[in-house]
Amino acid sequence: MASATGIRTQQMNSSAKGYIEQALSGLAPGKPYAIVDYPNYANPGDCAIWLGARRALESIYGYAPAYVSTVRQFDARRCREKTSEGTIFFLGGGNFGSLYEKHHRMRLRALDKIADLRIVLLPLSVAERDPGNPALIAETRSVVERCLNLKVLVRERNSMKQLRETYRIEGQLCPDTAHWCHISDARPTTEAVGLFRKDGEALPGASGNHLPSGDVFDWRDNRTIMQMNRLGKISPLIPSRRLRLAAFDSVAKSKVKAASKLLGRGNRVLTDRLHGVILASLMKREVAAADNKTGKVGAYVNTWPHLLPHVTLN
Image 1 (cartoon, rainbow, N blue to C red):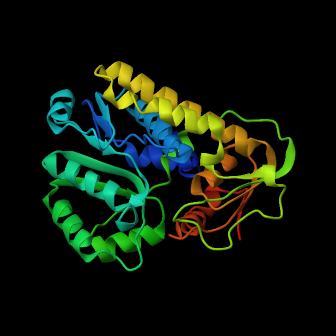
Image 2: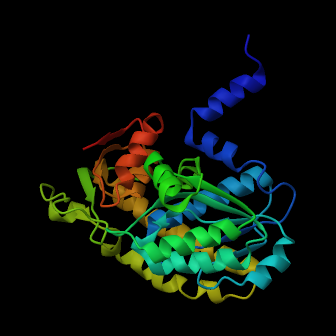
């Protein structure tokens, strides 16, 4: 007969939230912690990552972060003061590597300033230009080697391989923290909607052109998301940690709510955005997923098919 603990572990392992909880447990035991790299831009998918990470960490440890910031406004001295050498979590996502070089370099500078502390990179994917950037690869390796206690969580197997072969980083598989995000469902009003990229990660020919034009969009086409993004630009400047955290959470929730409303209009969702896949799945929608230029959508679906039962990969 299975023990109660064994049954609970089996149940946890069957869910994305369970995998994430297991990966994050024990990383910040009884100490203040920080979350760095708040997504202060018009991507509600990354806001879902933030909200999921916030919810998961507070659920596991029982208290809010002692320090939060964007990566641009990161203050290493203030972070050290507030966390008393606790764990520093960096938000995950799909911006590790040369495709988003400016952001990647800001993260490297932040890591280098706290290389003696315990650092966790939350579940991420690698995004490279073609060809790669040898100087950036060398710089990344150098900074990572100086980090004395670094744990890297990785969203899918392709990025695990890239991290190992390109950056000499041994990561640990973990689902995207957006699975911990609370989503408000919406009543479907049309058969299908299409969320398709209009940026550098879009593959040629990826579109929902067989759908009515009003049912095909990208995040930046939505007025509410863009308005909340402009409003949120002041939140990193709020001096009070408590008020800054509240502002971060409020803006992120507004963006995710608007995104969920867009996706929830359809009984089915067609998308080449990873968080289109995840958010629609949380709303129990049927999802037809197409890959993006970095391959992260296909890699994620192929890594975690049992967590995405309503998703088919085209």
